[in-house]
Image 1 (cartoon, one colour):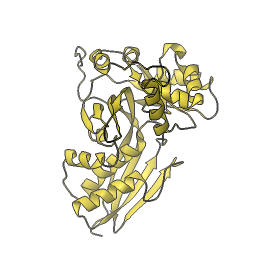
Image 2 (cartoon, one colour):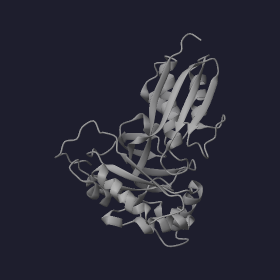
Image 3 (cartoon, helix red, strand yellow):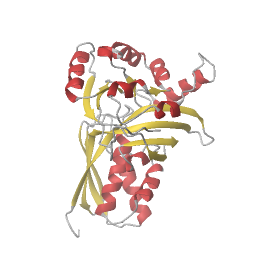
Length: 308
């Protein structure tokens, strides 16, 4: 090996603050429109030189594959083949984000691994090129190459800057169970097609146009929605019960991220979020965890700016 360089980067969790499902595409994916923010909490990816590709997973790895099916390993192999690189890398993945919760852990890990390996192997690929490669691995991967607040379209691969807000703290509610993404989408489609109660289509552009950098957490929360919530609650009654128990507690709205199973509330200060967490944990049981994390800083926050 030519060197023993080591590169480490955070792989942040994400929240879907808004999520509209606009219909099924010809390729079988769903057309979405979502406002996504990254959190200052998540996993960590570290890479160093090695003759072969190796992956080690540390931390809370329950339910995370440690073999060649892991998205990080797939990303590394895909980049190596695309670049014609002959070397390898030892990849250490420190897990904190639970799988299957709608927090984007696997996608964030894959994007971060691509960034680290691009540097380690001195490939000099552009962000756009890495993001395009990442989007072949998963719909959410591309968004992790962009800013802390983004709008994603298509199946998630089309990314543009999102609304700018001041720093907000999230209480991320992590149940001890997941929800099947496929089942949630199927249930949503059935509801929307009229097989059960008809579901109104959201108006995401209207909601996003109301967001401004001067808004507090409660004001931001009042604009949020997720078209998949009711379908997820019908697929997993325990999630519906958890949401019903916590939504409105202390005057705070609780939303779901992605297709679940994680929920979240928004707060203006960490102490406020921590106090709410203490109260919430006294009302739930069965292994529910609540992680306090801030939204990652936006590049600019001008108090009078209107976003939309």
